[in-house]
Length: 447
Image 1: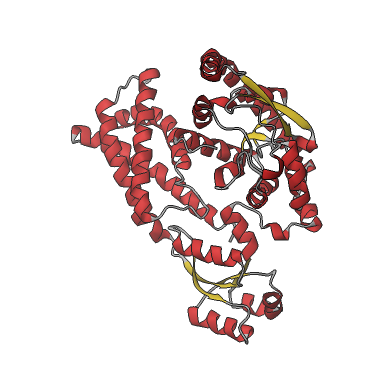
Image 2: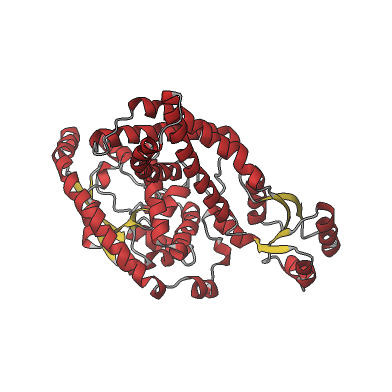
């Protein structure tokens, strides 16, 4: 079940590509009202094939291949597709303007293509693709938060592989009888069980009889983690750490990631130097204070590092908030703009080049707050097993991460996302975070 979304995502991907190709042929047809000759179609498909790669990336950023609970509802699909395709056409226009090596300048064609591709892609996604699979009825057995959230998300999702026909409370008198009756009543072949609940684990006993009837069982917690991208912290203990946290297995990944950090961060930092005089002038003109701040942070393996940023507050926020738990500093007017546009982060690119930071990883925390959280949140120090980053999984999907304040509960929830990254990190996941971060920056929703 945790991987049940992947075949559907691949099918959507293949269907989108076919829609792009068919839309190109139809656009050529509509431009001249006759079938395009083979040579003309080939002359266009070659440059458009390069664009298709970029367009798929735009679809990805727009969430059109999202496998988690934010799968688009039907009412949002058409709007998202139209925005994505409009953006794609803009990319195509710039591409043909700045790379005029293909011998074509499809101005009218791009206008036609916008309408045709939108209609075809919407038809594929809203009408045709849902017919390729029907969500099968499933039972959820349990009463915990994971079961409740899974049932809600699966029943609300547009492309979910299952619909929860019923949620069985494990505290009913005859749980075994209720389960057997529900399997027959709803004709289910999928049971999502909260195996951490002793009554649920006991009532199943030997599941071979169910399996012989074609019923498949899935762990509610594992499925929750796959859908929501966060680890259920109550399951984290020494055994969990021993099973899921491995540094040796990521040796090659770490080397490749380091090479990519340098290859991307170094040119970005050099280009960003052009903006330094203007940013410095704006900061100085507001209050005459220092341009940069050097902030202590806890890095990989609990090593204290110092990150440099353009100053955005009225002083140097070292994270020592005293008994109030709230910073006494405030954000300046220029600082607010720098934060909204992420310009205050530019000096940290040098930290990536030096190796203190990575482009992708858990956001580093101040030593004073780390000292508090390590006492109050079990296994908090696990997040320091990997290099901190400028953007991370928690920054994308945790909506309540604290800023300039001590908040143990919000940080505990944030840790569940950091641990998900720790246990699932890969170049593919890093690329996913990078693309999603770009989307956040473009929409100015922050990271």
